[in-house]
Length: 117
Length: 114
Image 1 (cartoon, one colour):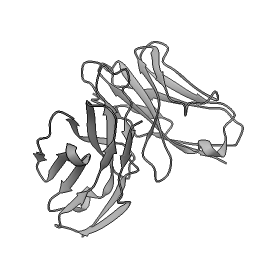
Image 2: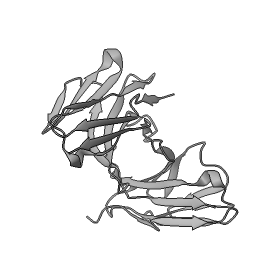
Image 3: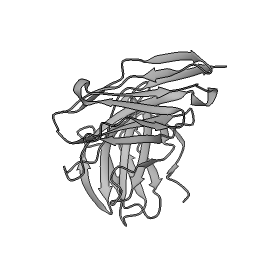
């Protein structure tokens, strides 16, 4: 069975601070995908990134960066110079690889980030 | 591209009543997914369609739940004999088969059973 753990339930930071959201996953598959989604108060889940298990390169997109470490089964997300608009619930998710017969995502419980002006 | 539309946005129903939600995916997306999200939790997978075929169902989808996608376009999710435990946000997502996991989620239908 697949499992995603986001140990941080809520985090508050002051605007312009950096913040890292932790994600630890469990799977018996050798090939899998990892995701981060943002859920603002409007409720719609917004896709941020997908990473496959073969690609351990870290990725940076503007103020966002992701650190994938297969050895520790972690896929952490860092926001640099946080802004009030970053306030949302962030979800880490895991799925099997395409062709494995399942396209469902297994989500963590989410981390609520509040950025205080 | 108007996104994934869900209707209604909110539904309040009395316990024991039946409710039906609708999802209109992005027009060229042939895959459609339903998820349920309770307060303080992440979304949980319910079911998945490719075109009109329902290919995967979660154990969460009890016999009171039924989903259809009759013409491979919009989908409906019906809950019969609602219970208070059914109160949740029901999220729909769609994707193209050639873009694995390129989900686009709708804003959801929030169900409250009183």
